[in-house]
Image 1 (tube, rainbow, N blue to C red):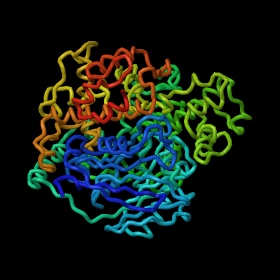
Image 2: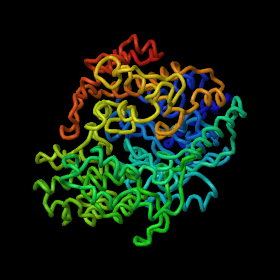
Image 3: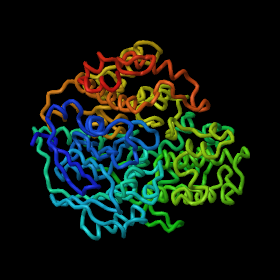
Image 4: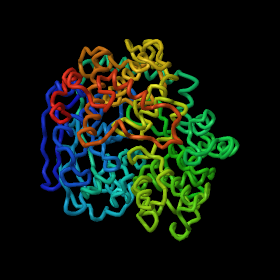
Length: 612
């Protein structure tokens, strides 16, 4: 076994109920790292183009980062990846908690699922014993009930499961571990549901060998001590987590208001927003919650006696924004209720809330009537109606069935010009940050392999952090001096940020790390894996990964370059910005196709036959 990674993956065929291990060459890890880098390589080569994302032949899987499972700080992340049934593009979703490290403890760098069960099943991998078991008694349960029932049966295990939304093939459903850590975007709850796979249960006993244990422990100790002694922003992260942004992002015009059509001053003023601030939410905080190997612990476990919630996770900023600012709702109790409902059902809060906002605006403009909405009065800020509508979406009940696959598909069903109120990119609702504030986010929303996502490599979202200082976050990483201005320097900066961002994602790092302290990334890779890797090699690996994710979508027939965002969401020429990025990436700026020379340089020759 190599240092830092297990060297093998597990293929599970639900149709045949078989398990197959595969050894991977060391070169694959050095070129693709882990996470969605490894996923892109394996799924691109093993799943034919135009495969139905909800069909038996579709592949999807769980991919821990290269460093996940070690004590390296902030490396507890893993990816769910495959073809998105929501957008038809490459799909991936980043998740935390403790499930990713457990994949490594089971001896694997990935678990990939194919086939389709004939009846509800769940998979167990417990100390080398692998089984596919009947899940008929679990089908219909929410993820909290499922996890509790499976831990009662199997002991101390890690569980990843779908709720009712995934079972009902909602294209905005996700997969959940730790009762509320959700791989929410791209629609993988529906993929898992289509395979009639309710849950995966893991308990491993394997240890990860590292190249230099003493160096790893020293680097980890030094970084964690730095976090512990830090003040200012890091204290805010520890105390309020992402809910710090509930007021700050609204103040700077970043949070979309009234389905992207309103403003703070006119529609949702700060004195109202303060009612759903991080400070108000934190009054119900019981204890911190953090993912594996995290010294910050930005999550929290809450208790809300008014709602009878003895234990629930704190709603994140995106959830508060989509069920608060986006629908003009300042009812704090409803945010706790909606967060808990969506977590338990395993449904993406961003897409769900944005789809509710779409429905409200359709109602406001007479496209929908009370008869259409099953009697619900869908007016802005009507928290009780919003809660009832979300329940209907979760259960695909009545009008909720029309909305359960997101706003794009809902608008196609409703018609009557409703599409202008659907704020999505290729079917995926936009994250709760504005391209009017972070200009490069327009191109990210429109053209990234996972469209509509705010958790992508976006230059302007990171210039406020230490990344933008020479050697400020990673030793040797530096951006061109004029990166803030349009031109070649900015395009080169966008390329470099793309490369390093893919790399940090694929080693398993939490992206909040970009807001913290200088991170000893190359030193940790050497201590854990043993590689003498330069920053240039790491960035190139990231560019290889991004190009392959992008090529997957092109191979699927997606006309990436001609995708357009809803006009009200953006006020910059994001296409021209993207064309400059394409040129620097070595992609044809007229159609976004990587050139043959670029594919060869990145060791992606196997893609050439598909694109040319």
